[in-house]
Each structure stands twice: as C-alpha cells, then as structure tokens.
Image 1 (cartoon, rainbow, N blue to C red):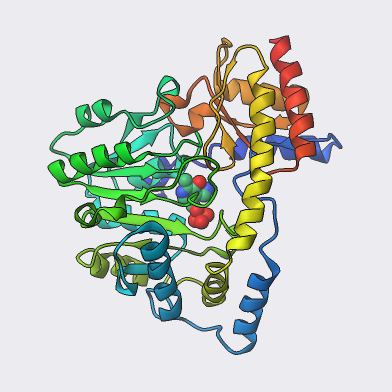
Image 2: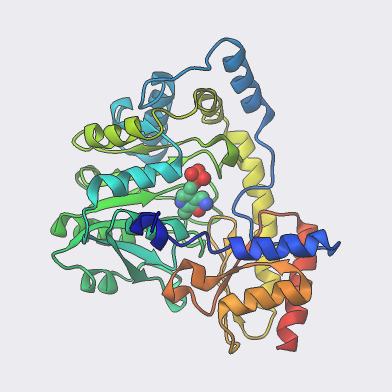
Length: 384
Ligand code: PMP
C-alpha cells in the first residue's frame, strides 16, 4: 500500500460526512441550519486586521525567528503573568497555531506504546494526534451527573507504567465545563506523583460566563511539568489566521523548538503582528462574550424544555452538550436530523466513547438561526 499505516489509520474529521450531506441539501435549495460550527461567527476586529496590513506593507512578510517575534512572546508572557498568575518569561513561549502546539507537544513526548490520558468526551484531534505518534489515547470519563468534571478516581485507575502524559481542556469542548481550583489541585498531585507531562489546552479561556479560568501554571511546581496551549482563534475571532502559542518550562523548550523548526518554521509573520494588536484588546472580547452569553441563556432555556434531554448549562465556550434518553445512536440521530429537518449538529460519539447519547450544538451563530434550529430539533425529537 502506498500510504503509511499511521495515515491510513487516521480517521477523517468526523463531521466531514455531515458537512457534505448538508452541502448536498443546500445545493438542492434547502434552507440548511448549521449548529455544528467550531468558530465565532464574528469578523476579526478591524483594528487587528489593520495592524496585519500595516505590518505587511512595511515589509514584515518574511520568516520570523522560529519561536516568534520577541514583542509578541513578551506580550504573551506578560499576559500569563498578569492575568493568570503564571511565572514565565518570553523564553518560555513558542508562537505557533494552537493545533500545531498540541501536535508538537505530543510528538515531543510520545514514543510508540506510550499512553496519554485524554478527556472523554473531548476534542476530536487529541486522539488522532496521539495515534499518529503511535501512542495510545486513554479516555478519562467526564460524566454528566458530575457536571462533566474530571473523575480523579478514574484518572488514577487508568495510570500505569506506560502512562506518559495527561491532556486537560478547560473550558471544555464539547461540554462547556470549567475545571475548579480543587480539580487543578487534584491534577497537580497526580501529575507530580506519577511524573507525567501535563498539556493544558486553554483555547477557550476568554469565553467564560461563570467562575474563573484557572491555569495549572499558577503552581510553580506543577508548571515544571506543564505545557500551556492557547491561541487567538476563539477569543478574537481569528480562526483563519492560524495563530496561537505554547508556554513550557525551560527544560522543554529546546526539544519542542526543534519540531517547530522542522515543520512550520515559524507562525505566519503577519498573523503574529495581528496577534500583538489583539492581545491588548479586551473590549472586543467582552462584546463577543456578552453576545455568546445571550445565546447560551436562550439555548439552555429552550433545550431544557425538551422532554428526553438532560442539559447542563455551559460555563464557558460556545457549545452545549445535551444528553438524551432516546434509543438512537448519536451518529444516526445527527444524520436523520439533517435528512428530515436540515439541521446540522455534531454527534456525541465524535468526542469519544462516553460522548455517545449526547450531541453538541454550537451557539456561534445568530439567535435567529438558533431559534429556528431548535424549533426543528424539537419537532424531530417529538417524532422519534
Ligand atoms: N483545542 C480545542 C479544544 C479546539 O476546539 C480547537 C479548535 N477547534 C483547537 C484546540 C485548535 O485551535 P486552532 O484552530 O487555534 O489551532
């Protein structure tokens, strides 16, 4: 066979088939509503776009140092020091798209056969990246009855001599739950006792409605084991710019940097200048989050009224993840909903074994779309 085993075994994005089906309906003139999008529906703030244009017109269109331009690395370190209480400097930062930051982290630590603990339900790409490194993803259950908080007993039970790393994601895609201080403390004990690498995916950090975001990096001793991943995609509506970063202890940086050098070389130069402008902009984030909050309240209220659904109010992100009582697999439910009512949602099984009997709705779309989408969903559920 022409293709490598690792690429043959990689699953395509699980939502792709559904997107194709949605497109077929659209082409035939149907009014399709997508509640499956993973990005803000806002445009990047204009002053951020202007900053990128200015940078490009002044010739900043070349390679930058592999770990990023110093001004941006300093701004990122300062943000983490001031807003998150994490004691780091620009030397701890590598500027790179968030997704690549996770890939670099996995590639740098995982040997064939190593096990990586991941949240289940959890973001779809963790599993594929770990497989790609020939490691074994092991799901740690997030349970609806426990507000989707990480089950520490389950976590400890799943550790063995092959366990190398743990990935956490707060606020969580797909559940919208956030980890509390006590969770981080428990994780700290586990990571340090078992000498694990902790990858903390904080990409939804700014999209938060209740509580506060706590980075595990607040503990100096835990930061010694931790790679923080964050970025500009979700907070500043900058998904297309491919810009984010990782923050890691000094002892990790040289190895991680090698992977950065030999893959992307550096993050896009113009996107780095855009990020330098965005990181100072608290007002645009505040406005977007206020809008997301209205939608979250609406969606939560409406879904809570539907019989057979168990809904937790998301504390962050722009996703809600209802559990349902109906006798139908989530992949089938999503397909049927598209065929019969032309509404796109994401099946819970895409996020792991424990995601079955759930579906994810993204409220990164207009209230009007949400109203109509939920109306059709209610109608569909009443018919099954
Ligand atoms: N982590 C999570 C949990 C995500 O949902 C996403 C984006 N869907 C990413 C990382 C990747 O972010 P980016 O597009 O900025 O690389």
